Image (cartoon, rainbow, N blue to C red):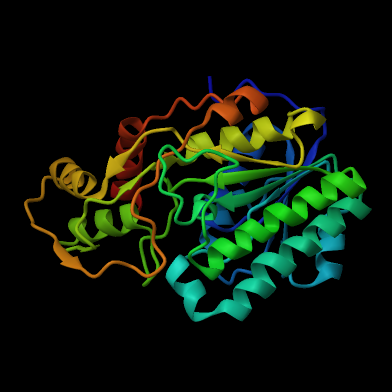
Length: 324
């Protein structure tokens, strides 16, 4: 189960863009733990130096401070690379509504630069972060690839555009691309701070500090919360996938469904806190319910996630207790 028995050709070099971020730093760590080389590219705009400080001094680790909006940087970063795990992007639906031009430049043009650099450097596999936001207002659950609705934010548009560009690179240039439609990823090193922080680390930090969390909306919205280990597995499995699966996008989730209000009370119990939340307005551009059908990834990528929400949240709480 998982990815710990996965192997790649000896001396394989991975490039992780956005490698100082939450998902990126976990990918870098997993690659090094498996004994392969990793090059991390990050401009540290949203990624954090402390996420990658633990790899400094590892002879198989290399850091490039650079921006994916610059094609020359992308070209240098892709030199001699076997596998690209492209995570560099700006997240957050509400922030994208405030900054549409930046999201286009960073998430779409930046990804296009990376695709072009990977093609010119003859990279074997290009695995990139997409998002469950591409399902937009499509109401049917579970969410299934090929059944997408109207996009609800510039962030969602940027991820959908990335998928279409990746498809073109597979079709015309023979670059094997694989889109990872992440569903609400959580786990160690996810940032609990700032206006756009993800809900689980934010709640944990606030409850540990005795602050009263605010839930946007009525708390009855549901999400397919996905522990970081499942995401690492999906990225590695995509690197090993056949050419037949290239040019496709895949749901990366556990396939469960948790309600925000239940998560809130569960965290209160786990942390030994008794506190009622306050309720705020719904967030603009948010979808009400999210739950993934992961059968396509199971079939085409041999993705077999073994971290349930319950198992993951225990590990996450433990990590925040030790590190906050």
